[in-house]
Image 1 (cartoon, helix red, strand yellow):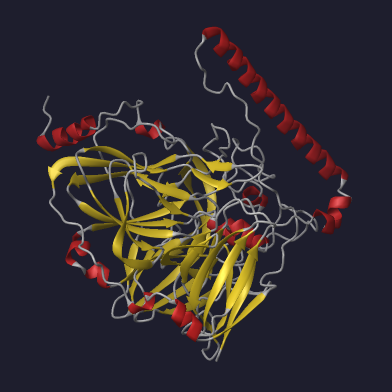
Image 2 (cartoon, helix red, strand yellow; image 1 turned 120 degrees about the vertical axis):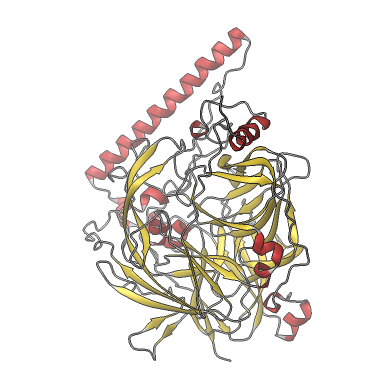
Amino acid sequence: MGIDRRHFLRLSATLASGVVVPASFTACSREEGVSLATPKQTFVQPTMLEAKNGLLDVTLTASYFDRKLAGDDPSKKYPVSLRAYGYDNQGPSYSGPTLVVRGGDQLRVKLVNNLPVNPPFAAFRDLTNYMKPNTTNLHTHGLHVYPGIYSDRKPLEYGDYVVDPNSGGVLPNGDSRQYVYQIPKDHPEGPFYYHPQYHGSSAIQVASLMSGVIMVRGPADDLPEMAQAEELIFLFQAPYFASSQTSNNYGVKDGLLEKFAQIANHPTGHGIHSSKQDDVDSQPVLINGVRQPTIVMQSGEVQRWRFINTQVFNYLNLSLDGHTLNQYTTDGWGSSTYQEYPDARKKNGGGILLAAGNRSSVVIQAGEPGTYLLRSLPVKIAKGLQTAILPGDVLAKIVVLDSQKVMALPATPLPVCNFLKPITDQELACAGGKKRSIILNMIGNESLDPSRNSPSLINQTMASAETAASEITEFVKKNIALAKEGISKVTGKPIEGSKYFLPFVFPTYDYQLQPANTIIQNVILGSIEEWTIFNCNSIAHSFHIHVNPMYIIKINGESINPYWCDTVALPAGGTPEMPTSVTFRMRFKDFVGPYILHSQMLQYSDLGMVQRVTVVPA
């Protein structure tokens, strides 16, 4: 048939998987099979810009990006116009460039805002038209860098400054701001990322395509086995946009994300539909703008993968069929040993849980020839009176060829910088042993909003129509399920969809923007403190604090094997009477000035789940 050896090897690899598949992998969704097509790598690596002679100087430009994006089905794409980053003289793309630096380098980012002017605030009580969607700024998520303004420089230069007042920020229609980040020489290595953090617009911008990776290099990267392993950047994205398949787009045209209610009242998104009891719909995940890309490896090959969950709400629970993910950084904070995550579908297996904003570095060694799936396993994100589970999803396909590439995993112990020394009981006691408690709790305030007491006639009519449409939809679903159940009883064979489950309803928050940073935690530079974050909601909030990393020591009051991170999942199922909790210790070192702690579920942060931290000189 004229098949050359390389083609034959590739064909053999796909056949060796023994998977029965539909006609095309592009037609699969969630946990289905893959195609027998000749493997071709479709994984797209973001552009990488690396510091030279201690400096990386780049211009980021925010503007609209007009393209087509895949939904749940990769073969079906939708035209969109979403906010995105370009760089230097390059136009906007699916992600910002990956910025590569080392400890001691200076990272300079000039942010230019070419988004159009904000829509007029014409609707005094239009609760779907949220603040200033096109005003922006920049946050370097997880970096230990100066959070203030260099006021002695003209024009002004900014560190990781995100406490802009309502009249501040980088305004649309051509305004710019120069950011300067001096990376400490002893900064831990690992994956970090950048995204907007302007209070009131961060969710709507990150839920577009406004994010990119920051890689801090260090001694572990320089190990020969690590340097020889190909590095892949996985920027997990879930862009939201109006679609004819969505029940309520709040008057927004297809392909656009313009109203805060699009993501606040439907936080987990649409596209991947719930199919089991307690499942909720979720937004399809892209990797660097591609839905379910293919990665081609050789048997025995070692690669290092950087996972960055940039979603504004949803969790990931990562597992690779037939392989072990060897994690060596949690967020950007390294470990001397691997934490092993075998195939979660098998005994003693488990997935890497990434809340919104979490990152992870893993090394993987390709096994036997075959086709394997990188999955996100189901995640329970709310429990209590109602339970919410994100359904499983297929994120990528890995095809392993039978051509051998003999490589070794980097040997442990891996080098770890002194920045990550454990915070002992003795060190905390010598610093005064101060402890604080922070409460995260979403509370509706219908009684405080006078517009709720006297809604307009048009709002009453629209609300009644929406309620009626929803009731009709559920009535139809219920009767279809009853009909299938009747057929199943007659035939004696089970039929999918013969059970009807009430839809999980996330709380909707129809109130005005809460002022940012209304509570201030004042801390003295050089202090060491222990904080407990209490979660009073059934939802598993993702908690993030800027500038300094957290040394996690307890979950729900029980001691754990401590670890470093800058973003942490708060256990679900909390109530005001019985909250869940996470306890951490922190060194407030190097930098004075104001920054924030907040829910990394950015819809909730924009609504007011945010506090200011101000570090003052000793």
